[in-house]
Amino acid sequence: MFLSNTLKSNTLKSSHQPLYNYILLEFNNIFKCSKYSSSSRNNDNNDYRSKNIDRTRAPLPRSIASNLKDKSEWLKRQLSDPYVKQAQLKSYVSRAAFKLEELDDKLKVLKAGSVVVDLGATPGGWTQVAQKRVGNSGIVFSVDINEDGFELARANFIGGDFRSPETKLAIKNALLKERSKRSKRSKSSSSSSKSGTTTTTIATATNDVDNNNIDVNGFVDVVLSDMAPPYCGISNVDHERLIDLAGQALDFAVETLKSGGYFIAKVSRGGSENELLKRIQQHFTTYKSMKPDASRQESSEIYYIGVKFKSSNSSNSNNNNNGNNSNGNGNESIYD
Image 1 (cartoon, rainbow, N blue to C red):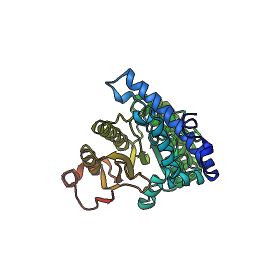
Image 2: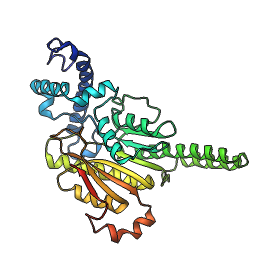
Image 3: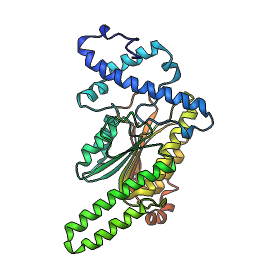
Image 4: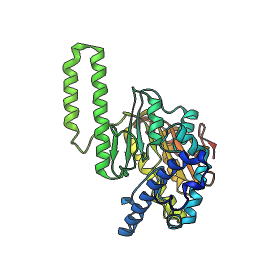
């Protein structure tokens, strides 16, 4: 509705009509997020942590949301964007899917059977790629505050603000149930004589689901974070908010990753990313910095990848070797 009044479909070439419809739906979802986020900011200007987070569809700047000409320019850019066209052809719900495709093609992070947590999953582009690559033996848990915008099946979708204790508890509950299922399958296949032990394990896990101190340490293979805050247009504020999100995603990764696991998070340049990088170095054997081709050229976003998570014991024993060497062996920027 918003853009159809701005740029009439009859001004487009007939070959562009399906793509126009695809982009129009995407824009309407973005604009709804923008209205929600703007309202949230007006209600509480001092606490951005409670605001809406939408990873791949961050709200448009206010100047765009209120300017019809800029809306038309946005649509024209989308129509000429090869990744938008490819997303439609491959039935991806977002062009952001190609970012994860490229990252994983180079790093081989997503493996068959993996347990993946996708933070800021709406509308589902990264989840689509992850599900395809981990296969039927793997599982992807998708988390986002924007529940209505998630366009895939919701069997493993967790709605809520990732940073809230309630949402984190819901994620850990889901992980615990999956761990219990896998434990049951493993024990059943190894020996039928262990069925009694399996029953005890499942019962214990079920009781633990209501415990605020749920321990799922060492269960997750990959934590993805493409979360982004509602941008206010002040670069240093937007940067700090984005780094804060990435830092909280790292905290979650440290709590749940198994030894050798991976962490991928969106960040931006602005200064504070250096402190986050030091933390990644502390917990991972190596790190990489990448900017996928699918990231827009004008975007300041880059991705930090923590490679091969170290258990708490190995992390403590190697702190002196890694914590003070920001350019140590194995750490590299593939391309920016």
